[in-house]
Length: 143
Image (cartoon, rainbow, N blue to C red; front, side, top):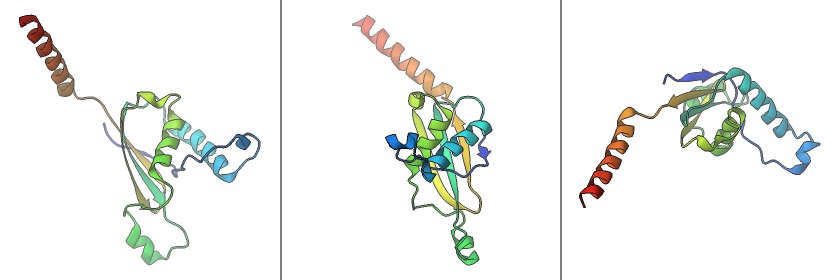
């Protein structure tokens, strides 16, 4: 499928505590605002095989020289990629257990965004599985 740009700054899923129900920590407020905004931007359900590319904005405190040098390079600082994935899936799926494959990357950029690519199972893979099952069954009948 064609990649889809989602114009939203990625936010990681924070570690939740019981007190988050009444204490409004900034990280939790940002996370819930991200979920609400993402649900408004993306309609429908996800395929079970997805690729995600997170573009995280560079700090405003960086010099223009450093920003030019770092733009598009791998983001190897916090937030962790697994927390970005969790926040994305939690926003779009009530139960994400059906997702069986995720490929994710994160890079520095001038503006934050998420690029989503959904993959569908190829017919050749499915036919190969069917062929293997038929071969096993025919082998059992001969024996």
